[in-house]
Image 1 (tube, rainbow, N blue to C red):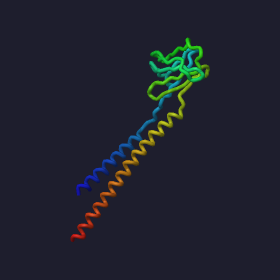
Image 2: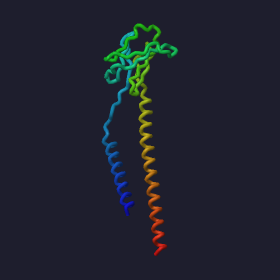
Image 3: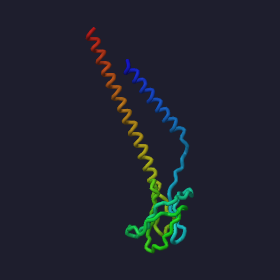
Length: 163
């Protein structure tokens, strides 16, 4: 009898959790993520920020030559500007904010924006993790319920035999 009560309680908790999750998913509004970009200011200076114009203070910047060797590794100023006037062999510049945003710009080309496909790949990975967790819990609950039914039927058959 106690197991039956616990089982009902578990079902209620699961159904309430699913209801809350469903309400959350249906009420979610559109969120616009921002992409990081490197925008050339002139021949020897860049601005690093997000595409919505938000600046990134003290972002890590690496200046690379054509072989990918680091010529300089410094941080941009408080407003996101970085000057590489003293580096004549600069081929590309990579900026990394340390929070998952990373972008590379080849000197002389237009502004560089972080590729969008990486964002979708991350989102797909997170959704996959949620699905896997849900499947694990679903399978666990199924096994628990099956074991409970089996033990109950064994107890019922023992009662019938003893009668």
